[in-house]
Image (cartoon, rainbow, N blue to C red; front, side):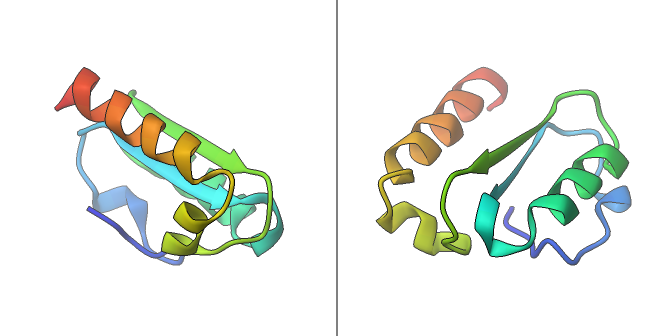
Length: 78
């Protein structure tokens, strides 16, 4: 599930969640807050260098790292 960082994470359930942002996009603090408020104990925050937003991160040099992190979490918790 993909959500905007302006959402309410409290109702997302106990499933593992990965919260992603770029350092310079302005949402990194909000993403960290959402991860703290989200239920469950398998939540992770990944703040990547740069200022790309959302799916544009995949088009940066951090895109491979993001994809690897997503695939690792799917393998671990999927």
